[in-house]
Length: 125
Image (cartoon, rainbow, N blue to C red; front, side, top):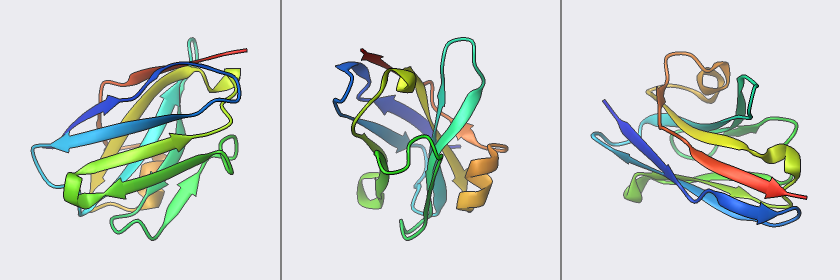
């Protein structure tokens, strides 16, 4: 089973940028659809972004389109989330997710996934 470890979270001012990383171990993610979710205090965990095995197909939540970019480096077994023009409403714990042999659509649905433990992103106004 794949283990996922997120990093790169922190405190940033509104309008700033952060890049999150998700390092996988235990198995290759080169044949896994990957994604990012986030959970704000008192809220449910929501889909943020997803990417296919090869990186050729991506999907984003409407709230982050045009500001966030998901990418992957299969040689490094790592997935990234570049977050630009951050807003206070982006404050949340961000989780990495994997679906071996899965699709972007399966990531979006959010079931049957392997999860990391999350990294906190705080955006101050």
